[in-house]
Picture: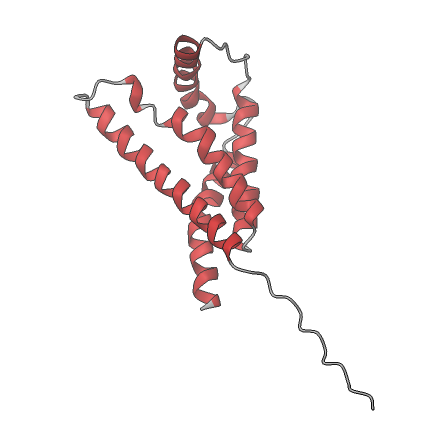
Length: 156
């Protein structure tokens, strides 16, 4: 049973680790293709936040945002493999920040082809988010083993 749990965590975390590895290899001086693809989506996200909430997000250099995502996915994935709740929290943080920016279905009309594709990807990432929450909940619900006290010897 322990091996199956370990194998499941390896398969789950490999998605994040391989993604981080690919982005790291393509990073370059400007953040690589990930930064170029993210720029219009991030600008649309900041515009939507400003128009809906009235809060102006500070100007952020996307290469630092990409470097942070690489760190969260890489470190979180490796820690998650070893059953760490902290690793799951790092992956949870990445999903919480990246998913609404990458899969911006809310910027399209519901009849558009892009809406359907982005909404499906968004819901898949929310399923990953839910799986991480489930892992953390289960990890916290299992009582920790308390070492048994040695029986006292009776003296007469």
